[in-house]
Image (cartoon, rainbow, N blue to C red; front, side, top):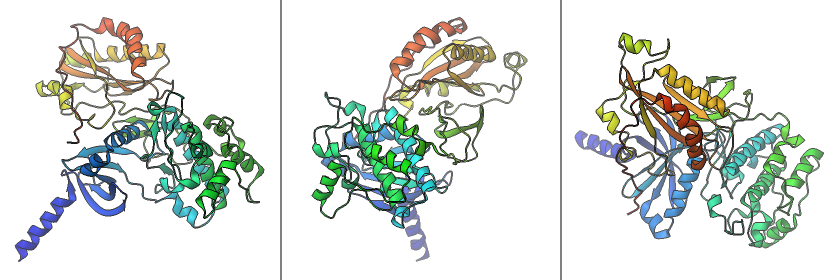
Length: 489
């Protein structure tokens, strides 16, 4: 009997493990096509939330493209005030979204207890606008913003979630507008009700206005038990601010809830508004090795907390990438070094990671499954050089200086970060140096974020000419172009 009990326990434990990596816990919530569980990474002990989708139901409902788009959007909008997608895994029957676990629950839970103090409501609204503005800069429009989709972490910071109804600029029709009717009735913009097409950014702004009103008043600006009557109020913009609203707040809300999308306030204008700017501080961050990192003091990188506190002294850069500088799996660093290789390194500079035959083979795209559910990645460029590592790094710094790029260095890894915003964020280029022999290194350069055309132009006009003198033996032979494809069969 005891052995049967042990066997039963072992079987239950195996069924609760996902691909041997995550241990499922209690059910947090469920929808039509997915269930969300609390889970734990058995290797790191980190708690996460896992969204489990049934492949068969997705196929039957024709939602394959929808799911792929949601994944691509979540990978594009990595921001401190947006719930982070860590990874996507799949079996023959299930798809798993491994996401950041936000402990504080929904903002709706706070509002349900009554209206918030002005300073508290303003702080949440500032974080919401920061996240929404970041999304819009990358061509992503949420289209279902409401307190139920705004979560709070353990430190009381906002986290925008549920991008299931989101759209990207690629979906805009020939008239430059979206035409899909979606959103939650009480938060939907009047132009969506007209069904004549709408601007995704202006729709999100309207929803932000409704959210701000709810935070401050404790009730909706447009409400009626009869949905059609409520829609009429929304269409006409009929709402009244409570007497405790300040004149500055009332003016801002009148701009946010302007029924004419052409004259409705924009994100940049909101950020210049006097009421909004009180106590506001931009958040500066970038992504390194799949983690959000914040630059708090000058160029010194500190990670005292996974997300910024309200008192962080930070300025805005909005620099985002899938992974600024990542080491090749399986590389090793030798503790011993010859005198010749020691002379080729700046004092204090670690020896580049050594590559063996298996490491070199691993550079093949067929061995990299990171893009399985993500947007198409960029193929890396590689060249061999007999020049000292410090000289290669100095040359990269020199090139970055010519085009006013920010340089971040870590051992033998260099990240060049542009400042010009676009739908995919600023251009970010990662370079990493690997040791083949004491007198020969391989330099790998790849685009980590930004527009592909801008990257190709930068390589042609700046990077290639600048690095040409360092190439001693030419580029290594091209590796097989083997790509992995997502299968819903």
